Length: 121
Image 1 (cartoon, rainbow, N blue to C red):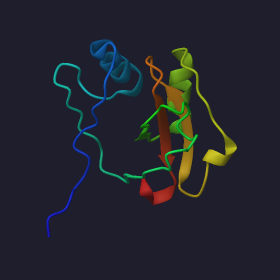
Image 2 (spheres, one colour):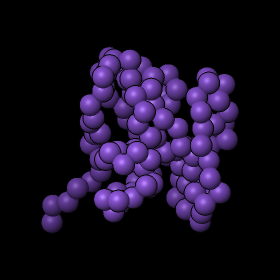
Image 3 (cartoon, rainbow, N blue to C red):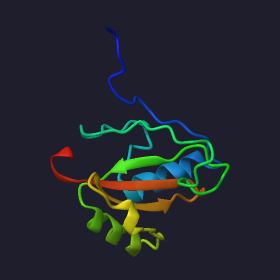
């Protein structure tokens, strides 16, 4: 039976696509702005619709939020703080599935960072 085998891309609008791509590459190590291709490491991926009235993403008009797996959340947060990027953490975000924090890209999009617990990395 045919099935989806993974996420092939995440596409979204930006006021300044080149600058936003450079920000993601500089601060999160994602992609190559010359080719727009990023080969990610295999691991757990969650595809999870939320209720239309959720406040989890932040602004009510926010229709999506990307969540990236990281291998060392503490080191990533230190790197982002050193670059002057605000980081939000909440105790209730940490659970049996791992630890989380949230940042916002230069265009205000929420970006969740997740260090999976245990062998799910």
